[in-house]
Length: 565
Image (cartoon, rainbow, N blue to C red; front, side, top):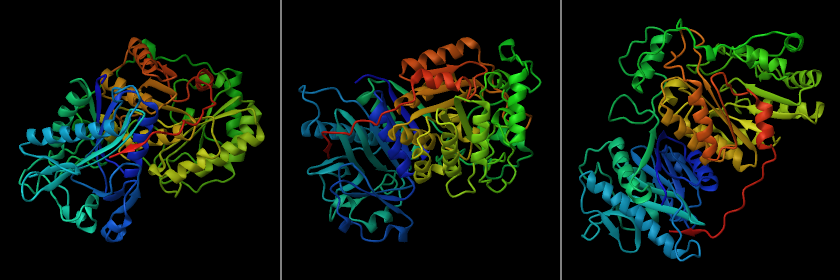
């Protein structure tokens, strides 16, 4: 197999989100990936599962129930369990594509990775139990106990789903099902076997063994932040940690950054390099657009976020309208938008935006939004209404939507997908390691899952990264690889500029040649267009980027030749 293996620790991720991300990598990617994560409590059923093996209503024990397209019967996923999803392209065998023999061989390779990792963690003697896929303790003894379940999908030489290794899992949750449909066989964990192993140690051991099995010995690994306590490794939240005293907003941000290895930064008074000094000229086109926005009582993110390209874009007749008000329910560390309690939704806003688009004669309209976690649909319904209003008023205008994640709710996204925006944009913003420090109410896997869902629906997809917040160039390329892996068509990369002393400090000024490198790397990875420069923002040259990749996407071909184990 071609390397490296791209390993991602994603923290605690909802099952549906992880499945959407897997499918994106399965359908569009060609790199080798290994997703490592935990799930909230969930029972999953494979394609041949029997509901008779589910003994209780999962809701009664705080879990959900999901049908999925892997092999196997019913199993449990939950906190304390290391779940691994290898999305791999297997080397061809026999020249006829994948078949049962290939599936069996692949399942055995997954089992072997786990067996070897367990030995490295100090639990030797694990193995296979004839007739029962998975990894077993005392497999050849009198009391075999299952410590890892295996369930995979293999189609056209590409894999998804994988394994679930019980590290410190609540084993009582398996008592509410017949695990894997196997009667009379016990389930165990590293903790139950007397081994004090953390999820991070288990992830490290599996990643090392997987690198040799599937990555030619090399790994490109990125982790979302683990908690500051080494024994609690799920992604941390807004808090600075038990016992910490948050002196002010700036200190709060500094504490969050320090937990992910970013210390110091440039003073806000530090002089910007020449390449970060935009040319500002408010000519008649700029003044006309400003007048229209004021008369129609609209908000533009160009003004609210202090965009350095305002005069250039407005002179070109392009503006990004921000709907759902100007108050955001989130407090991302880089953003200038107001975070006070939001006002009621103005349902006349879609028609007023459409009138502005028509009055200004825009050929390409960009809509963005504040996050509205106070609304059941995250506000995506009003964004959809605005797209529809623009289409009625000016049918020839292409419409790009830059949206929040709606807390990962797929049904809310479906409402927007139904009106078919010409470009659907959702920003990843930063690399995996910095996600929880930079935007604590969002998630790396959630953002990738949203983009994967939009791509699966046949939309042209777009995302953006801000650099200069403490990431490395290699991490940026890794993020670009993840976006390319799920088929994202357009990516923007720009320099972070600190709005106030209450926002994240600038860690570095990224030189223009680095942006040229990001563009080359992203497009080499398969992204259709990368707009990268110090002053690039999400909507910069939006019309030109959309024209470059085209905005008529096609649905992916249906899968064929499925095999299960």
